[in-house]
Image 1 (cartoon, one colour):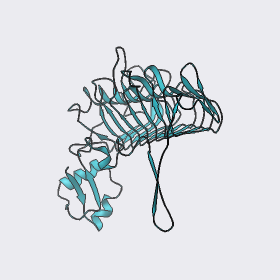
Image 2 (cartoon, helix red, strand yellow):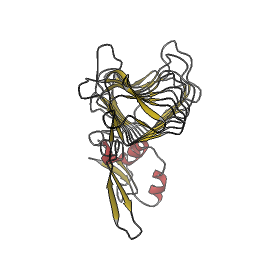
Image 3 (cartoon, rainbow, N blue to C red):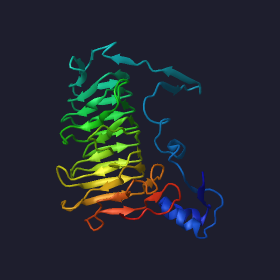
Image 4 (cartoon, rainbow, N blue to C red):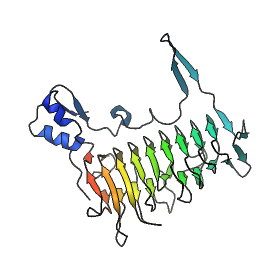
Length: 335
């Protein structure tokens, strides 16, 4: 792995806050490459976690909990997962529905440390889903948010059941109106779409190994039209197929506006990023796509057709800057 570095002192201060692409360019044209104050690692896609991005090592279930005592000793406790519906079928704020899914209908429910053989439906507000594995396949969802606000989904692992080829969507805001959803450190694989939502926060997740069934559109993270704020930050999103995207902003049901897509490691799809405004769409605004790392592990142009499309560089508040290539550190141009 090649790295470019900044020296300490005045150059180190100049480097602070620069995007990796700008930093790489500066160092490539004569700046001294000595002691490390800032470093840009290249070729991160094969092992994302080694560069601080989400991967298999730092997302998904926590099987052990480590605590430090005051005397410095470490206490390691193995998490005991219960399987739904085999071992347990109900708890405070939730129950197993015989049609094949968990329904969480209690406000402030904490749903933690389970393996679920079916969809998890969220109907209550202020629900926490943490350290849960969801195994379900077919034309279904891993976690479905149904007009529920303030849902937090943390450290989950979502993928198809053993006898299923793929799962349609990992996590979906079913009606597109959920408020203040947060999804963090989840490991989502074997789906045709990883996460589908129009507003909220999607932070430090690993979405990979998308799978195709006839008629599918393959999306890592997708929004289908909303002006509520959506933050997509520091995720690793790999789509090995030649369609559709790693991150897609589409105006299927409304305008695309107020999106912040920052610091992600992305690769694959037809175009790796769809920027929110295709031909004939309304004018998008406040679409900020910055400091993302584009990899060519699947296709030389990141996506089969290219790194990005459908971005209106003249839209009010729209910004494309600081995006760079994983293999060279060079600037990824505005599509």
